[in-house]
Image 1 (cartoon, rainbow, N blue to C red):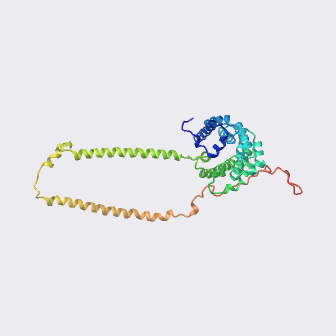
Image 2: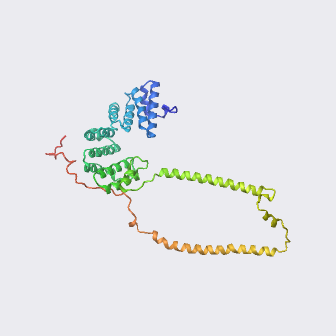
Length: 361
């Protein structure tokens, strides 16, 4: 365990629950939980799993420890262990917040029917908005596991949050799940649009939307982070080159200005006309080329102005071309949800209609 990890990095609520343990043991468990959180942040769920195993060994009756152990085991792919820990945490804390994760663990164990049982359980109705959306995503995946591809699409189409153009915490995952369901159902064009929309929501790279979009379209998705690193490296190289050239220029200027004798000039022929003294009677002759030199820039300036005028004319003519009607601009992908209406039969309506106005339980 890294030496800089302390129990103070843990949330106060978690530390309060750990007070049921002896002082030294509570500090040890807290430090392992912090280490597990760091490992997850570094995308190392296996290392995080080892830390939570230590915490569970010493604090198996603390609800927050079992929650952490279950989530980390789920991230590491140990679905049976994750399901056991989350069930224990549910008994200890009375919270149903991790019901979607438990249902997905059932999928991971190859039991989509049990996942659907959790989806239809009374506890699912007590979930908050984010929890219901996550549970719907798991339900869609379970129906795909059962081969009910059109039902998987309809499950997500029924969510009003799918039509929300604003970025929400669940936007990227929901759009990606819907695109994935469309692709599995054979609606490739609609799936491409929704993978593009998932990309626009997924700023943190939570999903594989970019890779799936590239697979369907053949487009090459560049890694912007790597491009930024390359640009920074090029900028540093340019700065170093400029510093070297500046230092060389200063050194050359110092040699030219600091020399006591004209020996710094290697050509001896140049010294003769400089040393030779001539009478200053031909000042007029010297001034004449100077005046000609002064007139030359003026002529050049006139030429440059004429060229500038000729260059600016086509630019003014090109302006109307930029003002094209908005109808020609391609519409943003996914702004209007590409909802389909597949023929899925009676997959979702297997139960017979109730008679005499009574609902079957």
